[in-house]
Image (cartoon, rainbow, N blue to C red; front, side, top):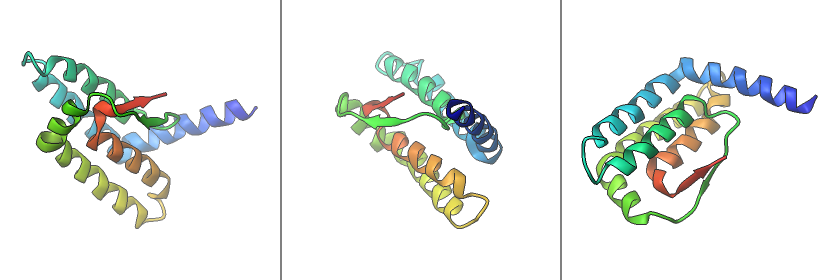
Length: 125
């Protein structure tokens, strides 16, 4: 019974998330992944971008754990594109904290913000 309630809230939360910015954020990650696919060095990173786009499309019910692997890729990411997506996610998280209707989304925005700054040191479950 508890599993069914968690699944129902996850589905409802993901629907709510998609309306208030999830589709936009997932499309940004997919676009960056598409650009990275055309480079030799960026191809493995592009696959990660598509995985992260999926996480940003449906973040409810998923946990993100930071593990320090691929630090060089994460530093390059942070210096190029990562800070833009991270600041955008942080701004939306703070904006969600300011409204009552946005409070359920604030935790998810902080989750994807952490993922935006260090995506290649992250594992999700």
